[in-house]
Amino acid sequence: MADTSENNKRIAKNTIMLYFRMMLMMVVALYTSRVVLSTLGVEDYGTYNVVGGFVTIFSFLNGAMSGGTLRFLTFSLGKGDEDELNKTFSTCFLTHASIAALILILAESIGLWFVLTKLTIPEGRMTAAMWVYQCSIISSMLMVMTVPFSTVIIAHEKMSAFAYLSILEAFMKLGIVYLLLLGDVDRMMLYAILSLIVSMIMRAISIIYCFRKFPETHYINIWNKPLFKKIISFSGWNLWGNISVVLMTQGVNIVLNIFFGPAVNAARGLAVHVQGAVQQFSQNFQTALNPQITKQYAANNLDQMHMLVFRSAKFTFLLLLCLSLPILFETPLMLSLWLKETPDYTVAFVRLMVCITMIDAVANSLVTAANATGDIKKYQMIVGGILLLIVPVSYIALKISANPILVYVVHICIAICAFAARLYLVRPMISMPTSKYVKNVFVPILTVGACSLICTLGINSLLPDTTIGSIVNIAQSVIISLIISFSLGLTSNEKAFVLSKLKVLKGKL
Image 1 (tube, rainbow, N blue to C red):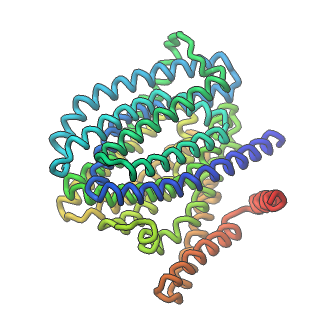
Image 2: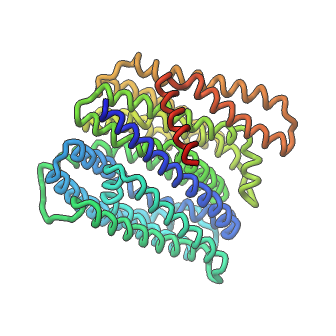
Image 3: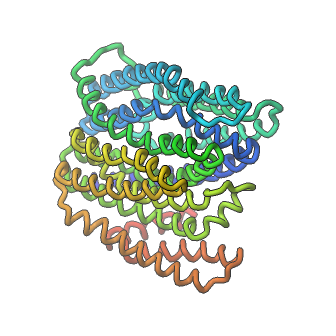
C-alpha cells in the first residue's frame, strides 16, 4: 500500500509539471503557427508542411526503435539492474545512430526523387522547398540520435526536467517568430534554418543534462549481441505498426497534396496544430503514467497494472472531453480569434481530428500495456494492418468523390476498428478480463460523454447566435463536462483523491 501511495503521489506530481509545460507550449504553438501562416502565406505554409513533414516518413524506423528503447530501459529500471541498464542504453544509442545514417541515405535518394517529381510545389518555390527539405533531414537525424537520452528522462520519471526543457524550447520558438518578422530574406528558408538551429541547441542541452544526472548514459563501447537481438525482435514487429502510423499521417498529407495542392495542406497543417494542442492534454497524463504500467508488469503486479491501464484510459477521456466540447461547438469562433486568414476546410478538419484524437488517446494505455509484455508480433501485425488501410481507402474515396473531408471520415472509421482490435488482442496478453475494462472504462466514459453532450446541446440551443453567446457556450460546456465527469465518471476513492489534491493546492495558493 505504501508503494502504491508513493506511486500515486509521483504520478500526480509529474502530471502537474507536465500540464504546466503543456499550457505554455500550447499558447506558444498556437501563437507561432498564426504568425507563421500570416508571414509565409497559405501556399508557402502548405508547402512547408508537406515538404518538411515528408521527411518524417523515413523516421518510421526511429518510431519503432523508440518504443523498444522506452520499453527496455523502463523494464531495466523496474528490475533495478544498473549494469543491464547501462548496456541497454549503449546498445540503443548505437542502434539509433545507425537508423539516423539510414534515414540520410533514404531521404537523399528515394525521398529527394519523390519531392522533385511527385509533390505539387508552387512555381518558383522549389529552391526554398529544397532548403526546407534538407534542414528537415538534419533535424530528423538529430532527433533520432537523441531519442535514448529523452527516453531515459521519461523512464526515470524526471518530468520536471522534461518540462523545463520543453519550456525553454517554447521560448526559443517565440524567438524564431520575432526573427522571422525582421528577416529580409526568403522567409520559408529562414524559418527552416532557424527551426534547425533550435533543434540542435535543444538536443545538445538534453545530452548534457543526461550525462550529468544519469550514469547509464555514459556510452560504453560494448556490443551486447543477445540484448541487441531482443531489442531488434521487439522493434521489428513494432516497425510494422509505426509504418502504419507514419503513413496515416504523412501519407494522408501527400494524398491531399496530390489531389488538391498546398492550400488544403495548409488547412491540414493548422488542424494538426490544434490536434497537437489537444493531444498534449492526454499525453502529459499518459507520459507520467506509462512508465508505471511497464514497471508494474516487470514486477508482476498485474492487478496494479490493470488499474493503471483503466485509469489512464478513463482520465484521458475525461480530460480531453473538457477541452474538446468547446472546440467542437465553437470551432469557427476559435479559428477566427486565432488566425487572420482561415483556409477552406480548416473548420471541418479541426472537428474531425479532435474526434480522432479522442479515440486514439483512450486506446494508448492498451498500446503501452502491449509493449510492456514484449510479445507484440500478433498485435502489431493485426493493428498495423488495419491502420495501413487508411491511405489506400482514402485514395479510393477521393477518386470516387473529390472531397477532402472524406479522408477524415475514413480515418475515424478505421480508428474505431483499430481500437476494438487492440482491446481484443491485449486482453489475454496481460490477463485482463474484458468485463473489468468495460466496467471501469467504457461505462463511465460513455455515460459522461453522452450526458455532457446532451446538456451542452440543450443549453446551446437557448443561447443567442452572437459572440457573447459563443463565449457563454464555451464556458458552460467546460463547466458541465467537469461537473458530470466528477459526479458520474469517478469512483468514491478517486473523488476523495481529487478533493484532497485540490485542498492541498488551495492551501498553497
